Amino acid sequence: MIIVGLMSGTSADGIDAALCEITGAPPHIQARIRHAITYPFPQGFQEHILSACLPEHSGVDVLCQLNFDLGELFARATQRVIEEASLTSNEVDLIASHGQNVWHMVQPDGRVSATLQITEATVIAERTGITTVSNFRTRDVAAGGQGAPLASYFDWLLLRHPAHWRAAQNLGGIGNVTFLPPLADADSAPLAFDTGPSNALIDVAVTLLSDGAQLYDHDGALGARGQVDDEWLTALLAHPYFERQPPKTTGREVFGAVMGEALVREGRARGLDDVSIVATLTALTAASVADAYRRFAPAPIGEAILAGGGARNPTLVRMLRERLHPTPVLLSENIGLDSDNKEALLFALLAHETWYARPGTHPALTGARHGSVLGQITPGRNYADLIRRTWCAD
Image: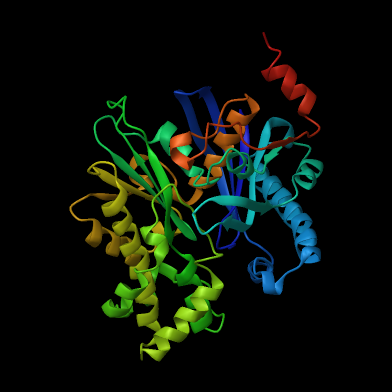
């Protein structure tokens, strides 16, 4: 199947759109990206999204309109990636839209009681004519799971090493890891959870410290020039989330704008210059990931594979390598996977499995009572033909 995967992450810095080809079925399923783009949000729209995710700055009217506005933008991103791939909408089978996460309700005991991702799928299907699968997380939450990290199922299907344990580490706004047993091990279960902040706090700090001139630490340049405050870092690592047993998830509700603003104030009160604040928050990401491996890895890790925007931050990658030594730390490109578009490919894979009524989760990865078929299907103009071609061919 030809599927367009769409993703806007915690940082809300644009739409990743990947035109993907998915064939086969588990355990022999293949997934590849044929073309991918990053579709930028209009000027000021990122700030609008992030503000809408704060209860004190938002309301039902804001979220209602934002849901439809995002649908329009996701539809345009779809049309753009199809055009650049020299295809037409008639040649695309499905769209997979994760949408924009706006709230992930984690109770004090770690249970997820609700989750909300918006981006109106009916708008996407109407504008493109392509059947759209969306709202992937909620079914897993309904089944008692965390609803995340959904990337772990992609890792489970495609990234296991023949002989040793792997850690598949995503470095988006929030970091998440999947500990994968080797293919030779038929008895061990995988383990997945959110490790804590990745780019989220760094991005908030850079935006504030630059008065909005920069939205992220480009090439890790600011963090590279700063000095890590080890005493402050130790205090930050005492956050109770890091001690909580997996499965567990978090989001910008905890590690977001409110915390980032408070940390900038605290860093300045400690007498740190701007680059040292960024360096310390970058070190927090690296240290929290390494701490998660030390606490929770089910077995010695043979190698860690990095994906997501944080994998493009050389300072963060260097800090991770230092803290995870002697475990080799590789980029997804080292194993033939585009790290920038892994999550867009992931949702294309999940939409494929949804269409064929197969689970998109493994209960060991999210803590759910069972694996579930994920997402909701919004028919496009190709819906009846797609049923005939895929379900009635025999």
